[in-house]
Amino acid sequence: MSDRPIAAIILAAGKGTRMKSRRHKVLHEIAGRPMIEHLLANVEALGPQALVTIVGEYREQLEERLADRCTFAVQEPQQGTGHAVQQAKEALSGFEGDVLVLYGDVPFVKAATMQSMIDRLRGADAPAAVVLGFEPADPLRYGRVIAQQGRILKMVEYKDATEEERACTLCNSGLLAARSEDLFALLDRVGNENAQGEYYLPDIVNIAIADGHNCAVVSADSPDEVGGINSRAELAAAEAQWQALAREEAMANGVTLRAPETVHFSYDTDLAEDVVVEPNVVFGPGVKVASGAVIKSFSHLEGATVGEDVEVGPYARLRPGAVLEKGAKVGNFVEIKKATLGEGAKANHLTYLGDATVGAGANIGAGTITCNYDGYFKHRTNIGPRAFIGSNSALIAPVDIGADAIVAAGSAVTRDVADGELRMVRADQLVKPGWADRFHDAMKKKKKAAQNK
Image (cartoon, rainbow, N blue to C red; front, top):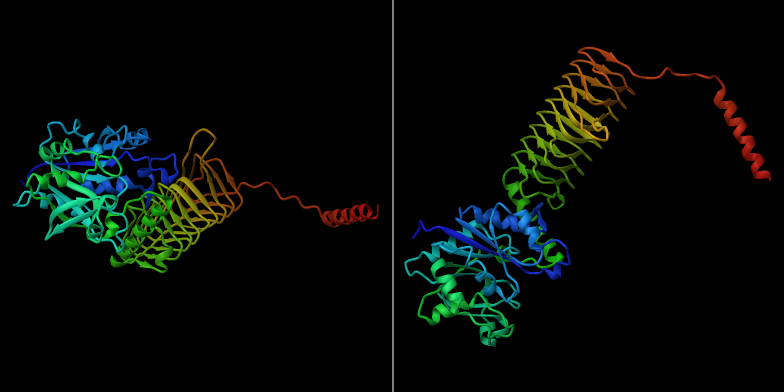
């Protein structure tokens, strides 16, 4: 039994009306990643042989996003969860294994929890179905799992439950595991004689029990693991939940967060031991920070690689492709995009470095920019090791600045600068003694005349 293949059916056909969005509900992001991708990452950890996503409205968005990762089945019209799962029957034709039924808007179910459902399904008593239960602080209007010692006696929707059944605190998350040979045979027997007139997936449990088969329940570690997301408020709550766990994990792994509640992580943020993060820092997707680095307040990093002992910020912006090598320093109001700052190099103030390579030990003066775009194409700037770029310089790409070269402040450089060369590109200063005094006297007379009219 343990080597049976696994398939997953992900229900994502709901209209998501409470989200009030033209984007499919399950494509709304948590920590920089669509909620369904959080779920898929955990499902894929189990090595499933097949993934089927049930789609409905806005299905083209899901098909575009997940085109190479799963098969799609359309539920139209939408007549309940049991009806939704039935739509996967053709896609799983010929599949002989264990099937997980999951929900695209329940993104935080752990791979270990899914595996526990599969393991229970493969138990010696061979239950016909395994339900994932949970015990919320307030059961509200969740369907109930009536069970004794892990064996299900009855599944009931809240609207159809008696007061005694509603007093049960073990609730149905909606997630379920069953053998493929049982799942669709049971679904074919589900009716819609209920308060909603829909085909309920949990009814397969009741049918199996009535046939004399055993069905089992396992419990999620926390209600948060099976929380569904149906509105913007619930999306924000899920984001807060995810961020709190990410911060705890970072600090447990040796990262210092000066004000944890103000630091925002992405799903793939990678911070090494002894990284220090000051308040109000945002990590977009694709950031890796090495040991000893300090990220100062109000910095925004995305798609960036930060080396050992690097200092970033405050008020710095690292965009995708930014690479800061060991000991480099990026100061306030510096933006870096598709550029490498070599070991020990510095850009301390008010600078833009785009499509550039800056050599080790180079110094980039305040107000320097690499002019990398001509309106049609991007061009590169290469700055050699130990070069010194004076303040308020414009390096007009493509251009190479040699090792140990100096670019004088205020220069607009359009041609390559050789190693050890000084390049000064300025107009001659024009001096007119007394001109300013005469100008002020004339303007004051004009103003006084205008006021006397």
